[in-house]
Length: 111
Length: 110
View 1 (cartoon, rainbow over the protein chains, first blue to last red):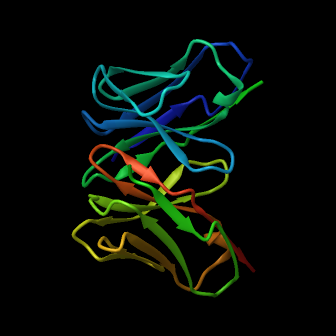
View 2 (tube, rainbow over the protein chains, first blue to last red; view 1 turned 60 degrees about the vertical axis):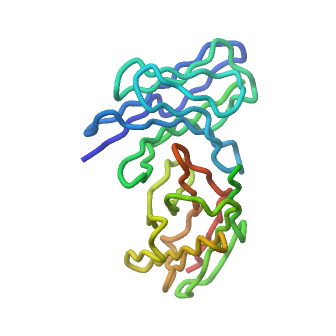
C-alpha cells in the first residue's frame, strides 16, 4: 500500500530564515505530487504540482519554490520566510482514478 | 477557473440526526469529485470519490451524490455520532489539479 510522509511535523522559524519541507511517497512510482497550504480558517490553496522528476508547475506567485529531485520526493523551499508564509502545509499524491491522498501535514509558524 | 463552494460553513446537530452537506462547483467539466474529512491539526482523510460518470457512492453511513449538470454534490451522513465531528471538504478534480471548497465544520453534540 502507498504511504506518504512529511517532515517536520511542526516548525517555528524567524522571519527571513530559510525553509525546507520534505515529502516522500512509498509504494508507488512516478506519482503526480502536490503541495497545498491551508491558512487558519481558510480552504486549501494549491501551491505547486509535479508530474515527474524536475517538472514543477506553480499555481500562484509567491515566496516559495518547489523541487522534485527524485521520483518520490517533493521539496518545498524558501530562501527568506515571511510572516504570511505561516500555515499548514500538506503534500498529496494522485493515484487512480485521480484520487488524492494526503500526508499528515507540517504546521509552520513564522515569528 | 473552477470555483468550489460549500454550504453551510458550520453546522451543529444533536447526536443521531441525519444531515446533508452541500458542495457546488462552477465548471461541470470535471473528472471526479472527492469528499474528505479533516480533524483539527491533521491531514485530510479521503471519504468518498465519485467519478464523473457516476451519480453516487456509499460507504457505511456516508452517501455522496453528484449532479454534474447542475454543478452540485451532497454528502449525506446518517445517524450522526460525536465522532463525526470534523471539517468536511469537497474537492473537484480537473486535468492535473484539485480545487477545494472552504469546508463545513460539523459538530455533533452527545
